[in-house]
Length: 169
Image 1 (cartoon, one colour):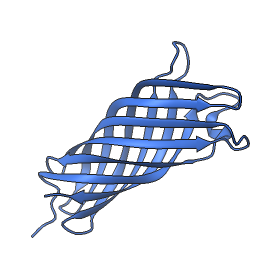
Image 2 (image 1 turned 90 degrees about the vertical axis):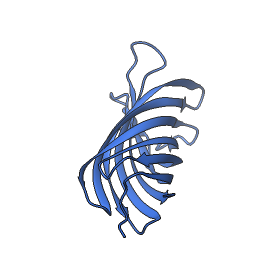
Image 3 (image 1 turned 120 degrees about the horizontal axis):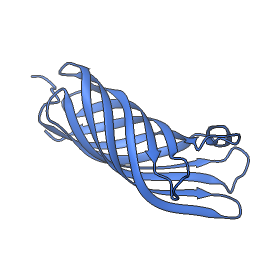
Image 4 (image 1 turned 90 degrees about the horizontal axis):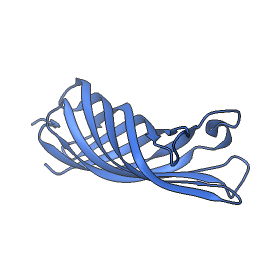
């Protein structure tokens, strides 16, 4: 029998890395911060081999390259759709888009700024079914977070993640 994604629910464990990219400028985040550990989880429903919808939580914190007391953290909860651009019963290549809400913090030596805001996600990935119960997924994504104050730049992150999906079907 096949390992089709169709009409299946998966519980997901997420592990990866992220890097803040903006706000850009002479002291851009991507030059000032190191990649940080990203972890999380979620649940997704695959309607077919070509479309799935997932609900996810991720937690990431990125340390500053030189200042030990400075970091940027980003904790989104989001709904994301994935549309396959190529698929078989055991593998799929897909593009993703989604939106959600995130808790954000920029911590510096003397002060910190915290805010909650709307976040948006886009990217792509590849999933391979290891057997009928487990799938291994790799994603590259970009995240954007609306700024706490009007007129400020959107805070953006890039991430790469490995996801283990356990299918309940």
